[in-house]
Length: 85
Image (cartoon, rainbow, N blue to C red):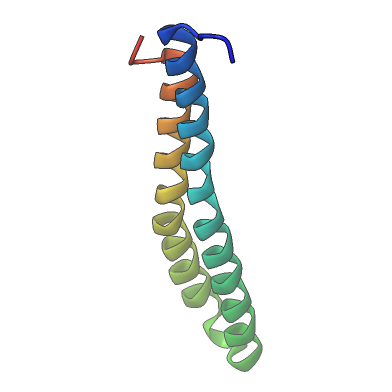
């Protein structure tokens, strides 16, 4: 095996870290899908409470999405800004 420069190693590890950070996007996707499914069930049971159910669901999905957004920001920092070089 040939020697690689430290800059190439850091760039590779930054790309690997960005990929690992984006695994955090799985959780919000599953959670929001589950919340939307339960909201549809709730609206089916109580159609008169539709606006309240949707409001609570959207608030919960917004909170759940912050994890994915934080992961995206970290991935962008690692790939584009490359703080370690």
